Image (cartoon, rainbow, N blue to C red; front, side):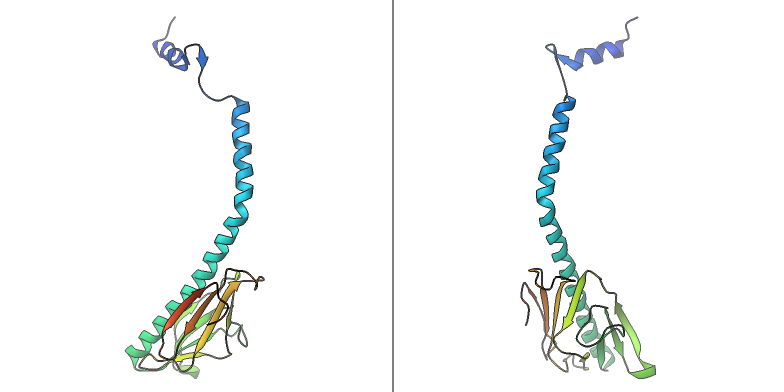
Length: 175
């Protein structure tokens, strides 16, 4: 018995006696070529991901500075950005807190969690504070780079001036 559906499939699957589609060999060659091209592109892709991680952490610090300045002006109090207790010296890789007040009365306004794949170093030890006018108590420079690869070209520097101005410099190692 002839089925109309099967007959229509047979009619469309062959055009002029030549079968349509790919052979298994053609498909395997195409997959192998795509694999080779991907192998060449992967190292460049890893570098791009590394760059975006560094820039994301630098942007997080810039947002923290802007938030601290705004809160200092809103509250008419000094707001401090300090490294977490797990870090020491000029290393800020373990994240930072934005606080207002001191001692037992300190209120944490925000916390920045660390990214273990990005190292953060400050130009000098200590905290960064902003007064009620939004001015910084000192000049600060933060260097962001891939953890374990300080010589990478994927470096970002955040510079904070006395007036509170923030600049992001990509590909440079200092302000």
